[in-house]
Length: 217
Image 1 (tube, rainbow, N blue to C red):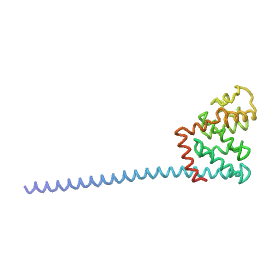
Image 2: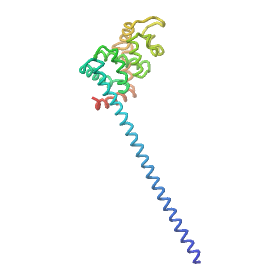
Image 3: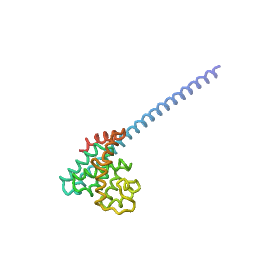
Image 4: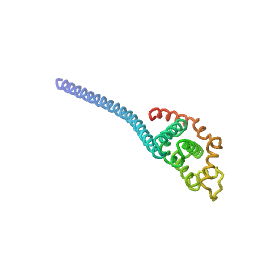
């Protein structure tokens, strides 16, 4: 009898110790899950912050580049203001526009003319489905070497939209005039960017850029 009681006591003690160990393990696991969740939340915030910093750096570098591309600090600052105003009302990311602006500045006569080139590029991007940066690179090629220099525009049917026949030789002047006629002002595709901006995604993008611009001006 005494031996059985002793065995029962030892068994209860071991069971209690085992349960205590399980509880400690569960508490430790809970803490690890909680810490992991916080780590992922922190990582998300860090990634957003990092993305914002990268965009800020790109925009600040563009401000400096514009000073040289447009020949003076005053003209460069004007071009930069025109760009951020444009970015706030179109459905393209500020990073895309900033990345594309170097190409567009090369074919713009001055800060005011940059507005014209930005408008054309935005409408071309909206119609073709190209991202803004790719559209800008093709515009730069078209304005510098004629529509024949822009391979992607031929593939996307832009050459045909402008009324140029396949194989026909088109001058730079004719190319620029055609883009101005159809992709700016009251042209056939002059409101394409505006229409795209009214979609859900476009509205969200414009709001996001407006928020960002408050911190970048």
